[in-house]
Length: 116
Length: 113
Image (cartoon, rainbow over all chains, first blue to last red; front, side, top):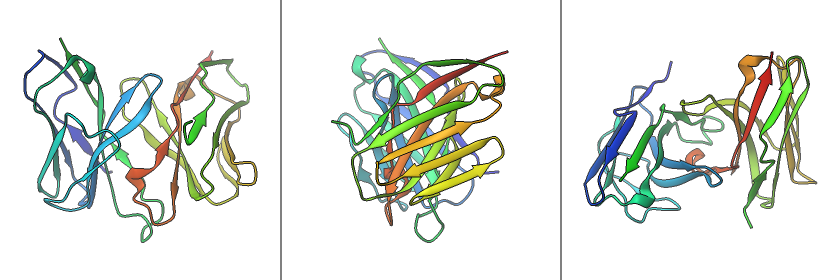
């Protein structure tokens, strides 16, 4: 089974702190993604990566950065956390679509971040 | 206006009921249509997908796509308490990275014993 592991399930940070969210997948997937999920706003794509050291902005990249030094690991960084970044953060991975059908997304269990 | 609108719910039904979950969309380029299920405090998991129009059945679940009306549905027959979850519809264009799918906001379903 594909497994996407997010390092922290629950975090509480203070405004201005630097926050690292780590994600590891074990299925050799090329693509990895970071989303945030908020009530009434659904899933919104923050950043994604289709290869090591490659990244692209999603719909809401402001205030975030990412790092992908190894194929299996994709990190989300909040350089200076703010209260409006309190949210559920979901990491996902997939094979490329087209060659392998829909390119099903495999999600981690989420990291709930509270910024005080 | 959002590209994908999902019936907001929440929805509460008795065990054994037939459930209909629905999404409408505005982008005619969407060709892949997915339904993800998300249990409380878990990440979403793919439940069903269809390509283009038509129906697809998997056990108690049926996914239906009507491209002429830009309307998709997920039907759950003989609903069970274990079906209690949030259901997210998602759509994407052909040759588009799956992670760039457009998601609905989700409908929370509770099936009462």
